[in-house]
Amino acid sequence: MRAIAVLDSVLDCTIYLSQNRSQNRQIGVCMQSSVSSLQFFEKDNRYSSLLNLEIQVEPTLGSKSQSDPTAMQNIQTPMAQEADRENSKIDVFDVYVALSANDHWQDLASGKVQVAIAQATLTISVTDAWFTPAKTLPASESEPLQLAGAENIFDSAGRQSSASFTISSASDALLKGQTQMIPVGQIHSYNLSWSMVAIAKTSAQHTCITGAEGLWRHDITPNKHGIIERRLALSLHDSLLSPHLCRIQLCCSCSGSLPAVESDFSALDETDLRDIIQAVLDAPTSNLLELSKRARLVVETDLSRISLRGASLSGLDLSGVDLSYSNLRGADLTDAELSEANISRAKLGGADLSGADLGSADLSYCDLHRASLALANLGGANLSHANLQDANLSQTNLNGVQVHQAKFSPQAGLSEDLKASLEERGAVFQQGTLMTSD
Image (cartoon, rainbow, N blue to C red; front, side, top):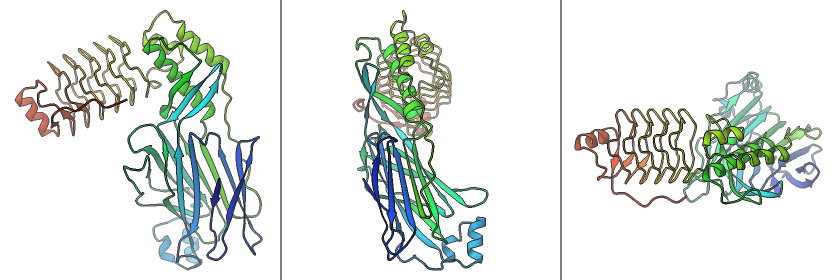
């Protein structure tokens, strides 16, 4: 890899990277012609196949070495005010980011697992300068990865600023693909001596297992399969993907190398993880709550993004549980207690929720296509943007539901008065479509 940072209107500065295999880091030195200062660059990216980050910094055309007080008019910090008082020359640099992501196979015990991430956060921090994020970021459905930004934050002394960006998939799927260089903001400096750190992180919630080989039989129940995968995802995140996926440091006009940064990655205890997997496999039951205990999962918080396609969850008390983004296609949830549960963006196509209590549950953006909700209680639930086309709504309690942009079939079996009431609240009645793919 090669990263480029142009730090002068006349003198180009190129950062050449060499691989430090013992630390799995890339370290580069930027040389400027006729300038004694060195620019140091360090990149720590343990799993570049999973998420790779590249940074490019260039002087803003026409703004180099110009006294431009208006460039700081919206930055009210002690250092900005000091620069304004001294009528300092303000240098402005454009910052660009390129991303690439894919799944990653990780050796584990006697087999291997395939890991992918669904979302990440990129934070750019600048010291002794100001970073202002772009007001708008390029977005296109044709781009596999999307970047959304937030306002920048200054520390109390005003000598450090940062902004965070969300990295997501354009299709709301796992991160896969790559982008060209995207302009994400600008660095404002008045003394040409500043440093920047860019860190990409993901959470345990957004870490997913998409495949496995040699770790268990493939004829186990969907409940055991889902629990083992979730345990693996959380363990791999905590040991291999935390505290960060990628960290890049860039120092302008430094007098020496960047200070070493401890990564604080913890070792994966493969023996303990293998014992947990075996405990789940040996369980004489497929009860999800019992399996969660054996896998040391906290039911209320650790089941987001779990895959339980075709699983049996009938009659279970899952009230208040976080099942967001989970795959529950074709699952048996009859008479399950799901009141106040977070089931947002879950896949429930073809699932049987007959008699289930979903009171005040968050079902926003859920796929409930062809699901059975007969005799179910959805009183006070959030169904905004949910797909209920071709769902069985016979004797379903829909009192007080939020239905903004929720899709229903015209032949949903609802009374004309109820249909009119739902339409007044933003529901859409249209012919059903084919069930979306996994």
